[in-house]
Image (cartoon, rainbow, N blue to C red; front, side, top):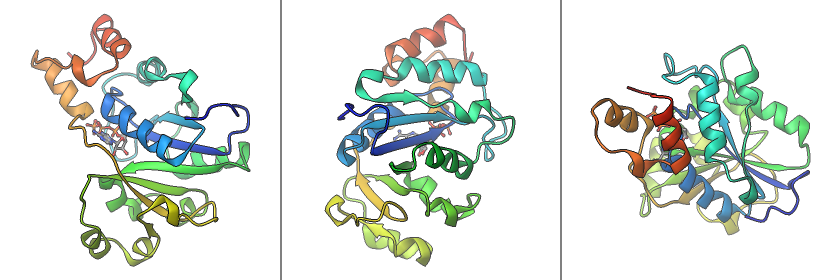
Length: 219
Ligand code: ATP
């Protein structure tokens, strides 16, 4: 990533998540995507109280500390803890409004997995989200695009873009599909492995692994 313009980046990639814990399946595809986009920064945004989940396993502070350990500021990967500071559920729309206000000139790319795109129209103020950023959806290589167009709401299907070169000059409202290397890792699997004493270190950045061990998390 080109990280020379730290103060006022022109292009910012965003990845929100519960990060309970953050793992390589979050970081590596997101970094690959940010690089592909030419983004100057990748912001990792831990959710405070995820509206779609009943609760978290580690505390908000611990999840943020693990994200901080996974960040590589020199490579433009930064922790954005604004959702943790809120005393209310995390909604992407609020986060995007805040970032837009702080960085009005930046183009924002909100990264998500295919599972999230399929439920996107259930997100709070999803139409407004599309007025503040572009979405970038990580898909498996060889994914059948016509299948997606059939499944998706027409309002979303018409915004799909398959190649970066097709990206319009508009800063917002487009849904870019990006083929990223699939990694079969989830926080659920890591938590289950820890409970069942199955190895899990290979799914995590080293400092996060040591943090989990030191703090006896997820046992
Ligand atoms: P859990 O297992 O607790 O549901 P998770 O591992 O799916 O957690 P989240 O924090 O819910 O992680 O995910 C945050 C974002 O990261 C989502 O957009 C999700 O699609 C994406 N993501 C999670 N795991 C992967 C992976 N292995 N490859 C690519 N994207 C991923």
